[in-house]
Picture (cartoon, rainbow, N blue to C red):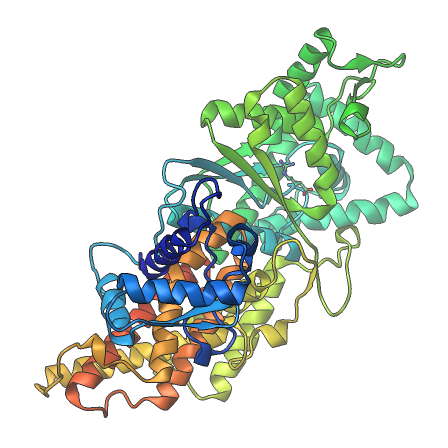
Length: 587
Ligand code: ARG
C-alpha cells in the first residue's frame, strides 16, 4: 500500500504532541488525525482539519494550524518535495508528484503482488448467503440484484483476505411448491420442458401461474394443494416422485441462469433437507421451556422481551414454517463450516424475519448467533411498475437478459462493428451483463431503485458499457505500442517522475486510492463504492487521454504514459471483476 497518508498523519500527530499543555493526559495518536481531500485541487492533495484538537490544546484551530507548520519547519522530517501550509483551520499538503508516481508505479506494475489487495480481513471466515430462490418459479429481476450483490460482496471480501464461502438455500418445499405440482398433476398430460421446448424452470413457473388461474374458478384447488403438502410430508411415493421431477427441472433452469450471469456457489442447501433439523430444534427448545405450546398444539416463541412479537414456530398440525427451516439451515451451516460471520443477502421485506431468526438462535444459546447479519437490500422496479409472479407478469431474469442483449446487438450493428468484433453475439451478451450489473450495483444496497434497460446500455455516461469501452480503448492503445515495439521502433523508458501534468496527477491519485476503496467497500459491504470509483477512474482516464498525447509524445514520456495506461487497465480490470462486469478488449 502507499503509505503517504499514514506517514503524514504520524507527522501531524507528532507535531501536535509537542503543543500539548503540561497538564494534558496522554498523547495524540496518529489514528486520531483525520486526513481529508480538499474540495479544490488548488488547495492541495491532503488536508488535515484541526478542529478536533482545539479543546485539548486550548487554542483556536487556525492557531494550531500555524503552530503545526512551525513545528514541521523546525523538525524537518517531511519528505523532500512535499509542501505544506496552514490555511485557516487546516494544514494542507501538496505531495511531490514525481515521487508519488514512482512509489505508485512500483506497486502497480509489480507482477508478484496484485495491486488493490488490502489485508484488512485476513484470517476471517465469512459465509455469504444470497439468491436463495424457490423452486416454483424462475429467477426474476429482484434476484438479479440479489445475485450480483452477493457475488460482488463475496469477491470484495476475498480481495481483502477473508476466506469466503458462498452459499444458497433452495426453498424447495412448502405449499407454494405444491401449487405448481398440483396444476401439473391435474392438467400436465405428461408434458415435459423438452416436449414443449421451454427452459425447464420456466416450464415449472408456468404451472405455478396456471394454478392461480385454476384456483380462481375452483376454490377447492387451494385445499387440494394443502392436501398435497401433507402427502409430501408423509412421504407419499407418487407425490415425492412428482416433487423430485419438478424440482430438478426448476433447479436445473435456475443454475443455467447463474451460469449465464457469472454467479456461483460453494454449496447449495435445500430446505427439504434442513427443515426437520429445525423442527427438532424447536421441540428441543420447547422441552427446555424456551418456547411454549398453545391450547391448539401450535408451538410459539414469545420475543416481547426483545421488542419483537410472538411467533409460531410449528403449526398445530405439526408442519413447519419458513422460519423453522431457517433455524435448521443455520445450524447445519455452522457445523459444516464454522464461520466468524454469516451474511444473509435478502430483501428488505424480510427484516423482521431475520430479527426473529437471530433472536431465536440466541435463545437456543448458539454463541455464533450474534455473528449473523442480514444485509438487506431494496426493491428493483421497472418503469412499467411493479409486477406479480402469480399473474405471470413478473420481470423474468432470462427475458430481461435477452432483451438487453438484443438492444446491445442492435447498437453494435448500428455502429457497424460486427465484422471487427468477429463474434458480435458474444460481445453483446457481455455488454448486456456489464450494463445490468453496473446499474444494479451503482445504488447502495439499502435503497429501492428503478431499472431502466435503455439507460443502462448507453455507451456514454455513467454506465457499465462506458466502463467497458474505456477498457477497450486502453487495450487498443497498448496494442499499438506493442506493434511499434515489434516493428523495432524506439519506445523509450519508463520514468514516472515525468508525470507532472494536472490530468496525470489526478489519474495517479485516483489509482492510489484503489486499495482503500476496496477495503471500505468490504467493511461496509457496499459494492456501490466500487461502482462510483470505477466511474471516477474512467473519467480521470478520459481527461488524461484528451489532455496528454500518448503515442506521439517524446519516447520516454510516451513509454511512461503507456505505463500509466497499463496501470489503469489493471485496476479497471480488477474492479470490473469485483463488480461482475465483463472486461472487453474490443468493443
Ligand atoms: N426463498 C426465499 C424467498 O424467495 C428467500 C430465502 C432467504 N434466505 C433465508 N435464509 N431465509 O423469499
